[in-house]
Length: 410
Image (cartoon, rainbow, N blue to C red; front, side):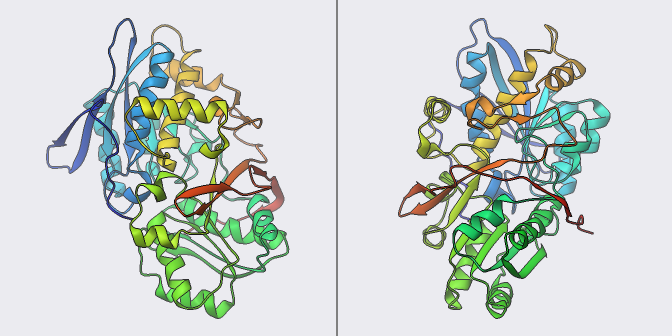
């Protein structure tokens, strides 16, 4: 993925500092006049630099848009950014700095490495809301609340298999990262989902090095296996490199479905070579896509515009924005004096969560940490510089396959 480019205008004030020798990038940001708004200082734990930046760095822009969401709810939102540098050690240090030095009220987590700081947040009683993209702590730790609803990463869902079946795929290849449990399990889940749909699974690699673009051996292995469909539970840079390598090897893919990359990740962030590789690729999104022009997407677009952010949102912008929305929903039941315990109690009272309408007519049972059995995906395909909705997949909804689980990576 190309280096992340700022898409903010002068409305945002950003100050970058470096914390004593730890290499933790901290940014303080706020937008708008305070008036009679109640203060709300949050921490954003994200992969702003390092290999994970291609997927998560623009979460900062999502927080900038969420400032206007918070303002409508009566809060003046400020936030500190803790950069994991895509390192488990630095992720923990960044999380500790957000709590111990900046005394944030709660943490928004949009990182592949949240699991490294999760035990610290739990022992400190810090509310954490965010994207459950890393590991299983989101379902086990009572202080953590996923903006997607609870994701049991070892369970297999029918949605991806159904999508590939609808696109004529007969032999699937799938890859994921070894360092990220949810990525590795998602790669295996995709294979099992495809098998349940009657599709052969010719190649699965759930132990690919994080962020690597050394994909030539993988492409050759997929070609030898006869795959004609591909999915990657990886950051966009890895996925685009693999797509390009498969094309060079003469592999014709009937369908490619990527877990990340929708929207600005391609149209504003990708290099020309990556944008070319993304042509005809389908991207899944756990929320309504902007092309649907629903009331919820229009409000999101308006808040992005207010923050000076141009173009389609990235996946991490969605994740940060919706996470703040969930936190605000929890604050309604947290009482007049906000503490970690009161916010966790308030979030625990949010039972049916519709992501401010971005889940369409399919809210998730947020309080159900054990038996949530299905979810929906919205799929859009890149054509030129725009996205087209995929008929029958706007959304495509699945259910958990009883008795089919994948083993956590070791």
